[in-house]
Amino acid sequence: MPKHYRPAGKKKEGNAARYITRSQAVKYLQVSLSVFRRLCIFKGVFPRDPKKKVKGNHHTYYHMKDILFLKHEPLLDKFREMRAYEKKVKKAVSKKNKDLAERLLTRKPTYTLDMLIRERYPKFIDALRDLDDCLTMVHLFAALPAIERENIQAERIHNCRGLSLEWQAYISRTHKLRKAFISVKGIYYQAEVEGQKVTWLTPHALQQVMPQDVDYKIMLTFLEFYETLLGFVNLRLYHSIKLKYPPILDPRLKALAADLYALTRYADAKDRTIGANNEESELRLAQLQDQLPANEPGALMHLVENIENDNEDDEETKACKTLFQNKTFFLGREVPRESLLFVITAFGGVVSWDGDGAPFEESNQDINYQIVDRPTQSHRFISRDYIQPQWVFDCINARIILPTEDYMVGKVLPPHLSPFVDNEAEGYVPEYAETIKRLQAAARKEILPMPGGEHEDLENAQSLLAEGVIDRTKAKVAAENKQKMALQEKQYHQELKKEMEGMQYAPERNIDDVKNDSEENTDMSPQQLVKDDENMTMVSMSRKKRRLYEAMKISQGRKKANVETLETRKKNLKKNKKVTSD
Image (cartoon, rainbow, N blue to C red; front, side):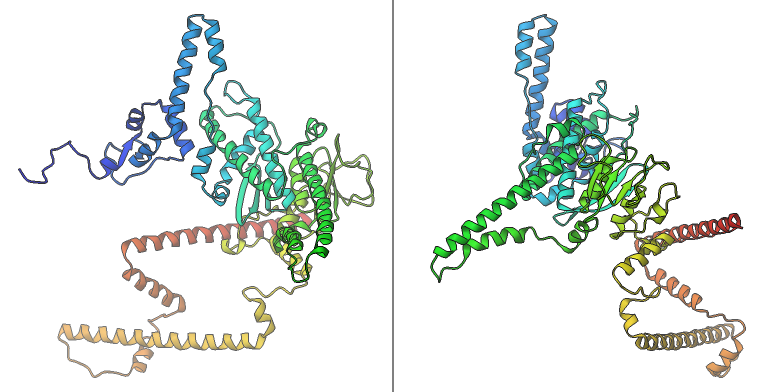
């Protein structure tokens, strides 16, 4: 028998040993399928797609290392303990032993996910990178109704609402909001926290429809993990700005559903107390500084300076902080109050609304803008502008105060452009985007360059002209050289063909003569030259690179077709406007 002989079926190697199906994993861990799903969601274990699927394509595969990782998880023992507890309670109830059942209900085993958060996110920046889905899920459940049949409890909805408002209060207080866009799905926000861009979606403040084909058990399992994660993140962020967590809110404002305003007031009050304490500490340190020796460095005074330096903001935060500075807004009843309150305060504005708990009334003379969405108003003030809510979102995306003429009540609004789309990369710049770009340049007192030019080219137009002439000369010389080479190659092939046919060898003619003879039959346009170069490069490519290049060409063609479609729509709209005006 050979030394390395292995009987068939005795030892697995390759993909058969590295991967395991879901049914095999459930049997190996000795848990139910629902518990296995919860454990995978909590631990961040996802299915794999091996190249060679041993059991067939209709199975779900997991890596064996992940299953061994789950086997030694303390939560697995806790889930088994909870399963045994449920059996004990069920047995006591079936035997009508009420005393035992009541005692068991008071000793229900519980678990926390705190150690899993520390395990999956060893650094705080890792948690911020994985916060997009977390915020979207928490904001979604904060807007859902409580449904007992789907096990959506009212306490969980209140907890999600509190966590989402605490996050919004921090973003508003620190002026970290960067983009906002209103879509059919909801309102998209993007904030920059400690150098990481966090994007999330909040649903509109409408009655939510609960579809029947959604597995809410899976969503609630994700929500359980995300609630713990967002609680840890909020705790760290609030401590970074020297605020206690969880915040203590005004019960009157909380009863009036003004939670975000109550959180903002809590942060402002804490800042005022910190400022007063800093003034007292500066006075005491100045008194102590006089008592120190002359050669002693002023280390005590540097403590307060370091505290002040920590609060310095970058340029973008300063721009966001001062966009709505010294501007006062009043919100009507029909506009979305929470989203506008969040956005306006994040950019330095002061907000009030029509209802209980408002900071000031509608008759206040300091109001600059009143945001309404109804064409008729009972009373109008001359000292303020009545605008629609889209103006606020367009202003924060453009970082300037836009003119209010196009956003007046009753007017057709301009297109709401998405700040998440790069118009230059897409190849199509909307007309209103060019208008906003001109307004931004006027606000910065800049001169816009010509299309395709740069700002440096405006300073030295002669150099730009000289470079253009040189480039055209080089291109012309290169085209002539390529045409000569093509004619020489054609002449060579003709002579080779004659030689193979046994014809008499003719003396070599001048290239200029061949060029004159073939001018009528040869068309060497620049487009043809570019096409020939592409064909030659594709011949030298490998199969993988060639397929990748073809896929890139297909995507470029789709993008070009999309741009052409938009251009034709734009032309048709202009024609229709002219026809209607005539």
